Image (cartoon, rainbow over all chains, first blue to last red; front, side):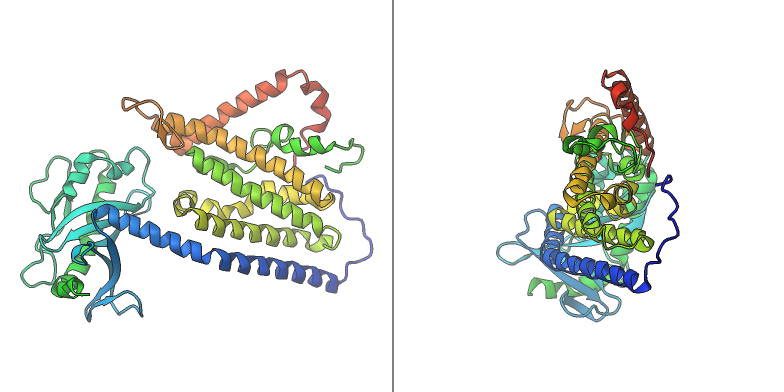
Length: 227
Length: 219
């Protein structure tokens, strides 16, 4: 391109011709884009739905169905209409008979590189977190991404204590990530050695989300049981 | 390319130009941003290669079809609109085919817009050749790009994760060479491939005969 000869002064292209060409190109491209958007919209929505269901069923195995809800100071409503003020989205899963099996919600906090987004499963009967799954992360491969695979780390979430305090306004004990090997209480998360920043992000994300969601959710659990 | 005094290429030479003699990565060293960023696994590399090929061929075809009606004053604007359109289309298509792949490739699909291989082909080739000719050259370029990306992605995945296409190759005792899937690994592997490719090109007996056609330096 650099060696293109400079255009010799010739007859000027009329402005009308330029506008006509650009208009034509924009029209053709616009039509192509709209057609593709409409043609793929259904598949993309279905894909997102399937990906979400798969992620929720992974942290809450044994579920047969899933429904989305908003928890807000005004109560718990199915996530279909307008988003209530101060709402937190969560997912409730049911077994074949229609009984509530668990609740999952998303948590996010800044890790080493970007937001670490995870999904955690909450057992309303025992008031504990029973598992986590990573939704997306950009942590360092081989270091931060151990949160996906490290068995000792994942064992923290077999029964992580998230009981509400007496006044139902927050957790009785804030979820906290502690230095590797120093976990003492069931609400502490033992960090992965060498991946402390990412481990802390997971703990912080869960704490933030649980502190917001659970005080809104727990008083309304009956609404989930009889949908 | 229509450079005065240069002999006309045959149809096969026109197609093979991008695959071998003017390979966008190994010879022209263009489009390094996606090359280094998405080649952490063979699947990502192939998907990126296929997406870029699609955009290359479609935009070359459209640019070539419109070559007689586009005034030279607005040609770059026209090409960019055409390229951006096909990138958006491929963006939707990948999200519709596989959301996991879409998230793995991240912003690099949208960034195909600024891949200099595509604008370079539109300007230097498609705008001067008939549609079939332009599309076949673009297809060759796309294949050359995809093969080169795959060459990087496969090596980085094998060394950096001990896997190929997500299948473990070496058993549980293999300690992955993590640096290979990190950015420095991209440079290491690219450097090694460039070394190998240049050695192959210089030692092949046909290299001497091909000399006049190569190395115009565009992009």
